[in-house]
Image 1: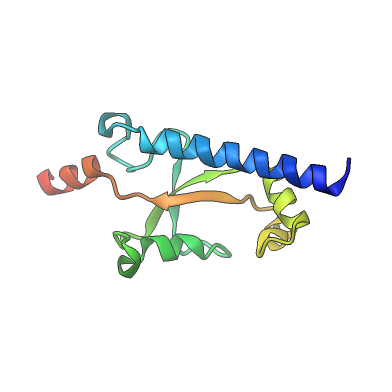
Image 2 (image 1 turned 90 degrees about the horizontal axis):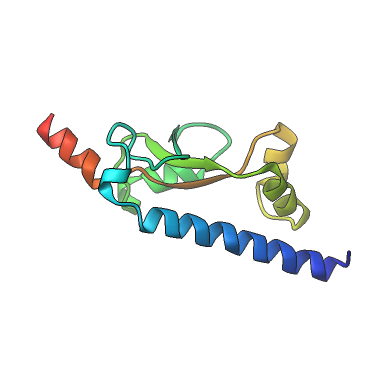
Amino acid sequence: MTPRWFLALLLALLSAIAAAAAVSTAGADVSQTPVATGCPAAFSTFAVATPPHKVPGQLDDPANGGNGDGYVCALALPDAVRDAYCAQGLAGACELQELGLPIYEFFEDDNPARQRARADG
């Protein structure tokens, strides 16, 4: 396997994962998203202060459009994705690999159904 071929395969895999995540979240109806967590199925709530991850805090920050509740939605990606990122020199991926931690797909847990439940609550 040549490095160029491997890079093309990796990019295709990452594009497919990103497209699947975008389609699943963009098409999510409010009724399909649990009100309790504000995260769609397969995603869990993730505390923004969990080291060594820095992205959750940036997403949740109201200055960046977040809701500031201290949580974001997270989906752990396969270790193969983290290992491929590390092999390509992506910042932070090798640190996560050394710690045995996954790479996550993060997005803000700002959900209209959850906001209505808080207002009604």
